[in-house]
Every structure is written in structure tokens, then in C-alpha cells.
Image (cartoon, rainbow, N blue to C red):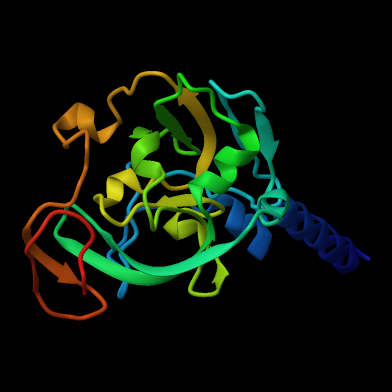
Length: 228
């Protein structure tokens, strides 16, 4: 009887510990943090570590100077006209990588929420508290895309999912990731990295690049989107 009692107590103790220290994949996912990593093919960059966003609970709030402010979930965004393109994301760290991106053009979103004439800039706010300002004029240029797909699959959280911006003629800090809020404003401000000396405009300048997908250095000879 003493042996049975000891085994029963041991069983209860192990069971209690398993509840206090779960080892399930769900628990590990809850504890996971998004952090910078030099991953082969496409580096991961955030300005600080933070927990991933659950796409099923994610919402995008669009407001400010617009006549039809709305909140979107991923399903409602996907009902808007989809576009796709292959383009390169160029980082100020002198690396870049190319991918196929899928999502919606800013004009498609703007036509839905109807910005006022006074709105000249869009304020971006991310799940990790990152923020940026981009002019409406730049956002309406060709090949700018709000992205929820990468390489024909859902946009991974490590690359800014559920939603990010791709603006291929500007450096990567303008291609805001993990977007949760957009506000139309009359005047632009200073984005997060521009507080530390980054160019507020962010247009790619001539220089040397190391495209991770091409594994060799390339020269950028003109302003704007690289042509390789």
C-alpha cells in the first residue's frame, strides 16, 4: 500500500508540473519572439524583439482624415482587388533580396476609406510600436503594395505578417511591417529611424549592394528601385 501511495503521489506531482510548465507546441509559440536574424536568402529585421501577431485576431484600423474610416481583418482585406509583383527589398545595411509579393494597391484601399483632400501623408503604426510617415504621392506610385502574401503563401510573421508595405524604390525601413494602424494626416512627421539620422525620404541612392539571392555584389547606378 505504501508503494502504491508513493506512486500515486509521484503521478499527481508530475501532472501538476506539466500544467505549470506546458511543453506543447502552442505554449512554445506563445513564448516565441520575433528577433533579428541573418537567415539565408532573406534576413529578418525588426527594430526590437516582440511577440508574433495572431493573424486570426489581427485587425487593421484605418482612420484620420478620411470620410469612411474602417477596421479590416485579413479576410475583409482579401476581398479587395488583389495584385502581385516580384520586387526587391533593399536594406540600408547594404543587402537586399527579391520575392514575389501579393496584396492590394494603396489606391484600392484609399478608394474604400476615401481620404480627404487635406490628407497628404499616411501615418503607419506597427504591432511592435514602430512608426513611419509616407506621402500619399509616393504611395500612389506604381509597384507600391500592401502585402499579405510572399512567394505564393501567407506572409510569414518574420517578414512582417499579417500585413506589410512594399515600396521597392525606397529603403526597407519605409516598407513598414506588421501594420496595425493607418491614419491619414495633413503633415508628415519624423519616422522612428529618421530620429536617428536616417533620410526622411528614404529613396534608394546609388551605391553597392549585396543581393542575398544572387550571392554577389551589384552596383546601384541610379536613384530608385534596383533593376536586378
